[in-house]
Image (cartoon, rainbow, N blue to C red; front, side, top):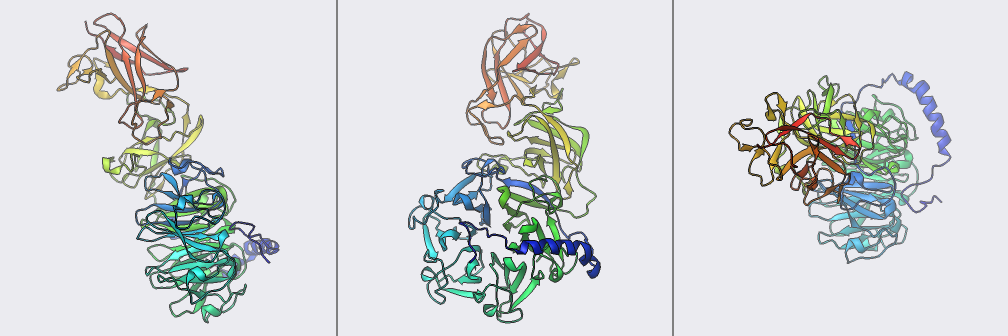
Amino acid sequence: MMHMKGNCRRKRSAAALRRVLVLALASATLGATTGWSQSSAPKSYVVLNFAGTGEKGFDGDGGPASEAQLFDPWGLALDHSGSLFIADQLNHKIRKIEADGTISTVAGTGTPGYSGDSDAATAATLKNPCGVAADSEGNVYIADTGNHVIRKISPNGNISTIAGTGEAGYAGDGGKGTEAKLNYPIGLWLDASGNLFIADSFNHRIRKLAPDGIITTVAGNGEAGWSGDGGSATEAKLNYPQGVFVDAAGNIFIADTFNSLIRKVDPDGIITRVAGIGFNGYFGDGGPALEAGLDYPKSIAADAEGNLLIVDSFSSRIRLITPDGLIFTVAGNGWIGDSGDGGPALEARLRFPSALVLDGAGHIYISDTQNNRIRLLIPVASGSQNSPVINQGGVVTASAFGASRIVAPGSWIEIYGSRLASAARAWTLDDFKNGRAPTSLAGTRVTIDGQEAFLSYVSPNQVNALLPWKLSPGRHKIRVITSQGASTPYEVTVASVSPALYAPPSFIYGGRQYVAAVSGDGSAFVAPPGALPGLPVRRARPGETIVLFGVGFGPVSPNVDAGTIAQQASELAAPLEVHFGNTPADVISYKGLAPGAVGLYQINVQVPAVTPGDDVPLTIRVGEQTVSQQLFTTIAP
């Protein structure tokens, strides 16, 4: 007997040797004998990391999903609000990522078990959940795989069992789902009528749970194998199916995993093969899917154009089948690994992905299971000659005058180039979700080593972006992504701090660049008289407090998540010195992120006793780093 070993995986059989042989033969002969070329896919994607750090574990609830830990994530589902649900298998939890990117737990305590029905789902125990689905009423369905049951989280947060007794087996067709037996259920799919389809993997069947709670079998006779194409689906043999999908016409598509096939059951109940040749391998791109090799496909879905998307797990690729039956690879280069975020999906490395789900915009979310991540595929124009271009020297700190090409974590930067966006667009309050700034404006995104940056402004020639906090000092690659493609990676140097004071061109007067400063009471700008026509302006007075603004000053305490509006005072972690000419400022009443702003630093400094009537240079030092700008402020006589 095959054993699950407590999770959704199953041991590779002796067929692994056959797989090596098939791959060798395919590369040597199959392309020549069929005449099919490795032609380009009809759709192209850029890949991003959406959730998970790559380190297995459990951490991060309440914060950004990209900074959270997952442990062998498996099934995925999207609800009507755009929230993504994850079967976080080896954490024995269901996690939820809101539209603003915040992750939380909605079911499971983290301890494997089977308990908690009729109470809060977060107080219940699950065991290796591998599947998840969501309906339009706010219900979430869980394939509680290791417990051999299907559970439901109601909109009030309580959990119940709706199918399975908790004992592995096969029984109950035609009766209540709660009296039926399942055997390691994995994939789930809800159709438009509210029927829940279940890949009852170790029973080698696809089951259907109707809205009235009655369970039936729609495919598979219970024997492991491959037979029955062209006949009744319930008389056919399946082999550990792990994924199921139902289209709008009522066709049921099955990831017949250990047959390395995709099968289809039409509304009349007739089963046929739509992809794969019945043994595992990777070949056939550009040709008929019926002549292609698949390698343990685990999940299937479709996009708005009718293309089928397949998680070809053991080849670590995502495959696409067009409506006319041709197959292509759209993500993964076949090498096992964890790389490529921010670039073309075909150049990325995956590690045994397990499931996928699509949103209404055609974005594909992938559970990259053994990388402990959720990856996101963003569609871009195929073969476009209009990809964005970053100018040489075109990434600088967003301080205007004297901007540095060395940037810091959590700092605003400016990116200059061409084709960076389809139109000019600045953020608005509506773009903020739960206090978090947008990562996409007018279809433009920015990544640094695959991490998404936050955006305040985009235009064809300029993008203003806020870098994430989790960047180590060294060289990093920035890309701009639009619907036309991704820019060539642009290398920047990241330092722990790269301080710069805000000094816009409007503060140039008499050939000198003055720092943007306001009086302590906020009544006027600090600048030479006449510098800003139509605005209240005056010189600084010794002994008064003025307020300076800047970027790149480094970590603060308490920590403020990048991209969020600072709600309270937070002090710089590094020491700060301010000199007016050669005179140090002895009183700095505040140095940290500006409350009510995003990523902007504020320094409240008392003007020391300097010579009245002078324009004095400002020098600021953060830790061991001195601001390199040549800036002035003006002192009243």
